[in-house]
Image (cartoon, rainbow, N blue to C red):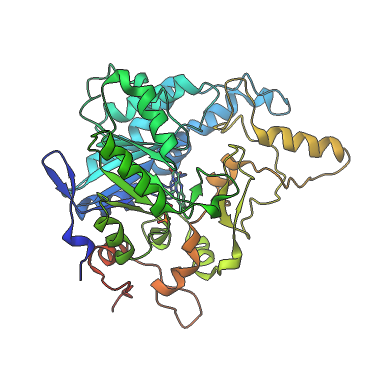
Length: 415
Ligand SMILES: Cc1cc2nc3c(=O)[nH]c(=O)nc-3n(C[C@H](O)[C@H](O)[C@H](O)COP(=O)(O)O)c2cc1C
């Protein structure tokens, strides 16, 4: 019986354990988590989502306070178009987060950064260019382009000296999205180094509509394999979403996958950024406690625990401090939803906003409990303690369980 360890992911002449831990913003996939994957010969991700905030927490910088102070005058203003990111600050914060992580890397694996296009940050092109450039400058091994079509992202860094050295990957949820990406980037003569195919059972934002249930990862992966074969393109394909056991992974490897990307099982790792109390919510969740909703201002459906404090909260938009989802004109769907509720309830001290959420603030505070479909199986992966709580796992244990398990078994930690 095959184990995931019988396979290797190949980039050029180099080989890796074919396990990629997916990027989980905001700092849920921490540097510590990514470093474990790299040490064990696989691939870890950090995320550059809200990187100034992450840097403040990790390195005691004061980026958020500085921005908040600069735009304090605008807090009560509904028009957020004056709020802009200082690009030098953004570069500095990215370099700290990425650079220090790379300096700490040990082992034969790689560390990539997950870069979401939907973080439009008031000036989509300029801020994205800075995020990509800064990560490349300070030695990142690879960049996974996610949450968006990224039709112009590679062109933003085509003159960077590491343009052909850094691995670039794209996350797609359909063959169409992949074809579009390839067509729009054809003139750069730089195909992606890997393609993550994310199905409808993944955590975070979904690349599907609310009819996600009609789609199936295996079918999409097969279509993409066929297309690549037809086009004579040899690009590693990495399925993601709902791969819960090593055997699930082996089934994809047997049909030609180069590796798998997994995340949900690592949300209960000690190295994961979620607070321990929140991790207990993930452990306890049953299938009916999880939903896919449309409260993210990005417009993409998102999967989360129904008990997430972010659902129905009506806090004042915090764009002066954060503002990561402001578009090029200073708009965010939450601002509109919040103002609508305030106008409807002019005398209320607090409002509740049901249809959208202030994603920046709630992700920053770990109050939006986004999760994969199989979160309800996490309770089967850990030991229950006498007080009824679950014991968090070492990331190494989870990684090795994927690597060596057979027959859909999940090993509980010993000792
Ligand atoms: C808590 C959580 C947060 C996530 N955040 C992001 C993110 O910021 N960007 C992204 O591209 N994918 C994100 N994802 C998706 C994962 O990177 C991964 O592709 C997917 O969840 C794999 O499926 P699995 O969780 O069933 O293993 C997130 C997933 C989880 C569980």
